[in-house]
Length: 254
Length: 330
Image (cartoon, rainbow over all chains, first blue to last red; front, side, top):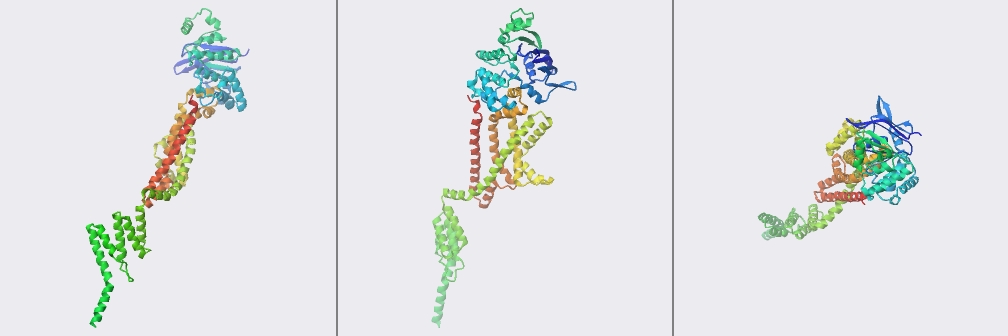
């Protein structure tokens, strides 16, 4: 089957520091990849590079079989025209650690914003889409509330509905539960699990081993910008791991 | 013959005597006045009789005016009025007496009544002047947020030439007095062939100056919005401008409204500066009326009108602030 997303030899440096160092990763449609690793290992940078919030220094990104996002100009990679970037982003939903809901819009307006402003969907239709997505994350009864009145877990579920209302082909989760109180992690985790079960393709960057174990088809352990290990959750959690660094990281988490 | 002479002398004397008396009384009264006994002097002045058919060389008129002035000086207003009325009974057209009577009447008026009269007299002119002030304020309030937003966006943007140009505009118009800018636009631009009427000159000056100030306020408002908002907007496929228009700028209102309200209140008062480039607005009107009447009430009334404007603005902005920030309340 054709790969939905293929990252090849991605390199990204911040000054002398190599945040992402020659990393490759591919996802088939419906596949779920969980990236784990200590802070500062480059997981978020890699994830953000997928929808061009971060530009890469070299490597290539292909989406549905086509190289996208960059052009070669005088031997250097340059970001494609903003119009093309925007178009790609409509197909990739992103959920942030700090939710980043639009505080001046109600819950349903947040979820309508993408379809209305970006896709030009008629308001009534967009509202219907938004409401069905809010229904899916269990937030439809909060449609007319402002984000300030919601708990962290509720905010994150709305953020997921907002991303879903664009009907993306790929969802990126950037530490979706890291900013939540422990008792709120469950509801967000449940929502993501449900999405995964429906067959959504997703990349999740997290410290939460529960995601890795229950959701992932593929687990990647990242440190200092490169992949230390890649495998199925089974290989990661059930067998004796050869690499002591993975072992010690997992031990630290549990 | 002798008897006839005596008789004729008597008759002559009888005829001449009032004239002589008047002179003497006048001198006597003046002498008493010099000593400072004003009341006694008045009594003597009032003894000078009304002129006969041949007139009295003005003694009567002078004496009554003098009595009136002295009455006014010792604040015995009814006595002053009585003296002037005596004079007016004989010479109804005497301008000095008529005007003096008005002055005394005014002095007799209670303060509140005088204030009422001044108000009725000056306020229509002042209101006419404040129409121009209002026009300047309203137009500047429309121009400067647009100009300020454009300058702020230019300054924040990545395109260096525009960013530098916007920096320069802010630097120039924030760094020089508004008065100087108005002078340059109105008196200086004709030197390079641009001749502006006062109203456009004033609007350009106020518009540029306030755009520069608002640009910095708007810029700080935009920078105060969390970076994640722009990322979230861009991640769903919005262009930079869509994100600005739909997500970033609406969130700045809450932050920038208090300082913008402050600027607009400063603007109301700064419009007074355009009176220096031949514009007749509230300040200029007040100045003209004051110079014509030397009545300080004019300036007080102008102050009240300015306060009225600023008060309305203050309350309007307070209500706007409450509404615009409502979404942050739980």
